Length: 276
Ligand SMILES: Nc1ncnc2c1ncn2[C@@H]1O[C@H](COP(=O)(O)OP(=O)(O)OP(=O)(O)O)[C@@H](O)[C@H]1O
Image 1 (cartoon, rainbow, N blue to C red):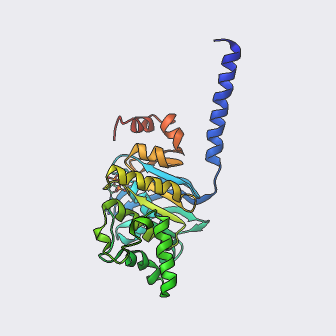
Image 2 (cartoon, rainbow, N blue to C red):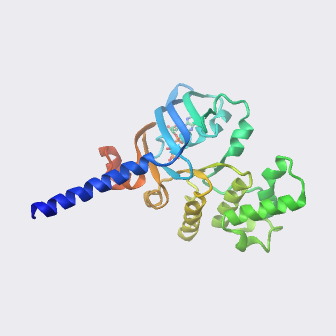
Image 3 (cartoon, helix red, strand yellow):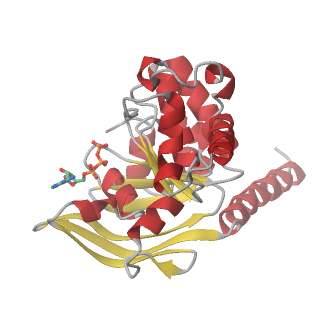
């Protein structure tokens, strides 16, 4: 190969690397986690986790079973407060406010919504499921509720499928449809951040694709943090990926980099399926 060709490819590689580094610097930090440790009784589950999550991006948390992904996710809206044995130290700021210093956990959970692994709809109509949260917040006006329900179902890309059966039981829908109603229920609370804990693991491939497409579209309006065991899913839908192992973040970077040129051998071994 001639020197000129070598120089050109060297420049192209440098530009590519610069592009990747600029990408990680872009974006506004929405959630800033510093030196977070979490204990279940005497058992430590998270060790010195520090990472910044950017606004209006999808951040994927990956890693083998039991490495602390769900535990970490739940710290972001203080769901772990519900477990007596949990002790936490370190800082988590959302919009520069330490979420462990506020007494208003309800406000926090309104701002930071959550979608679980299995659709967990209430045994009531589609409409009542989506209107549940707003009603609890005191909204009683029928017109206003109708509008919230419609907007939320549209936002979860399921309006057209259910608009003619809003008063029928939500439990009569398919698993994939139920999960999108769960997303609509989260959207109805007008959150800024949505946490998703393996939201497609109980779904068939077609429903999975629909939910993935929905997540990709939702990031224009929300900051999304998703736990997934599915490497292709993380690669397809996330902007950044954090690789967890034994309660530590081993590597956190732009998703393309994590999957194509990880810095740590353990990340490479995991994303290439050598363990997990
Ligand atoms: N309520 C709890 N009480 C005690 N230990 C817990 C509790 N929940 C999780 N753990 C422990 O904390 C560690 C991290 O668990 P966590 O569920 O966060 O991992 P994970 O990476 O989400 O796993 P998976 O992918 O299997 O869901 C594990 O050792 C787990 O057994």
